[in-house]
Image 1 (spheres, rainbow, N blue to C red):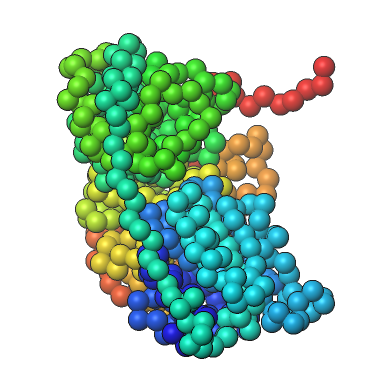
Image 2 (image 1 turned 90 degrees about the vertical axis):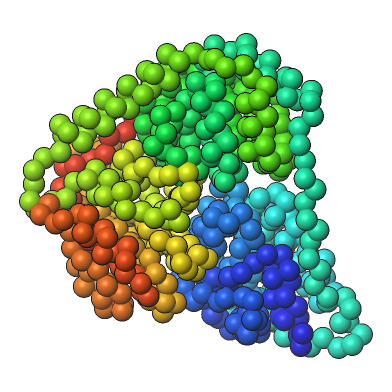
Length: 555
């Protein structure tokens, strides 16, 4: 290690980082050089710092490991805000590193002299700036520890002269990276299991809610669901954790602040107790829109930092979630109330029959999103990673794109960032270069980050970007009485992709969807864009809460 920037790069590696997403600038040149030259870090050059923070957020959601983004001072740092708040709200461990003017030039209204630490502090887990080289080792160690232990975002602003400071023999021992110790494995006590079993046995109808911290545990959770005859519901960002083709799976609850799927909403309406595995936001499952807890709760989490608060639980169990599910299945008697599960199955079958068999028009000019989702599902390999943007595209995917228990889904679940999809695809493709990485975006959201096709092409990553191109902001139009400010004038997305060095094809109602999807999935070495021409009147079905929209009135 020649300087402090080299120390920072090595410490990132020791804490599990594999990639750094960002954009160059004068105040981060020493750190950028250290990252680019480190043999175990991959620098991903994005086209905007906002996309860099979204990519870091997506990678942290996908892997559960620390991800990092890098930006210069001033506007480079301000551009990071949206992606960092997305990661913060979704519990993704991200470290943001930003440059600062040299220490002797700060506080004098110099060019790009912005107090980024103060700017970010109200919105993320921790934000600080380094004023002296001796501060850096403990500040960096604390920033990474807090991000990993609290599943949040931390930020450190570092002046460029501190980054470039050479390490002499006197200080080299202080700047020796140390890997964090592995976490201590935990498992619930017998008393915790006794309380959980008693609560479940007393409840009439039990529903199982599955969240992101349960990734890799889907098979064990489904075995427990079979024994309890309990329906299983996931949140939008957790599609793919359980096999959605399983008869116990009742769909997705929670899409952009609404239930989204009527069947999932109704299943939760019948439940007296929620058995949660890895759910971060329990509100939609135990309270609904009112915010008042109306169902009993037994919560299971892999570690104390994953235990959600805010609601009264009959039992809390911390440990490996697949082992907890298996132990509960051993201890609980066979039974449960099958009528709720049977009713959910019948409702799902009726819903799919209505949309797949009755509502799909024969239109040669437009491909219907339901058919597109079914084709994408049918050909998605077991290693597939799915990224969703915000809008009608995600509502269609939530209800008609069925994932197995091995797939991963990425979404801006709590902040709802339009433009999330393409940066997330880049992160997923860089992290798992051999996987089939597929994104679904609308023509509105995708144009917020469409320039990142250049980043993807330059990085040589393989990904498929499906654009539902209907010429309108569909989810906004669905909420309007009369259309206003929703029409879009779009480019030729395939021609645009080719201009960036990618490839693609246009899909309409006359296209063989199976052949188009197979071609897209088989393309390697660069992004492939499917420009799917959809009818503007084809809006996704979306269920709301029972109390609907209630405007405030003065009494």
